[in-house]
Image 1: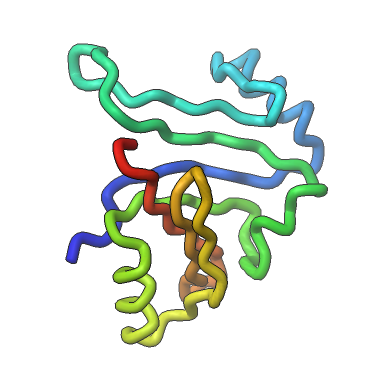
Image 2: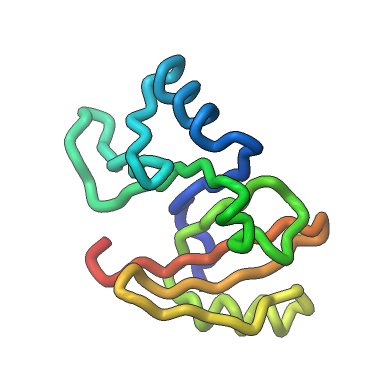
Length: 129
């Protein structure tokens, strides 16, 4: 079974989200949107678009619940092919898999806590993404 196929997003906390978003926009040229992040579209070696995006987002303290019960100020979202099969395999291997699995228009989401206490998000995108 194929497990992780890529990075779907990188999310991190900030003491002052607006200031940090402005810093990344000014100094690194990241097109930070009103929701606090951006979606980088994938491209091939020639710069032609290919299906997929990677989300980058800075969250304020109001959104910190998305990082719980992890202990890190960041969370990485990994793309997977078959969320339910991977979650089952991780449980069978003794990993700390959270019980909740979300299924929405944005895809299927599940979470596991790594041995260092980091919350890891697993994402099976909707068909065609």
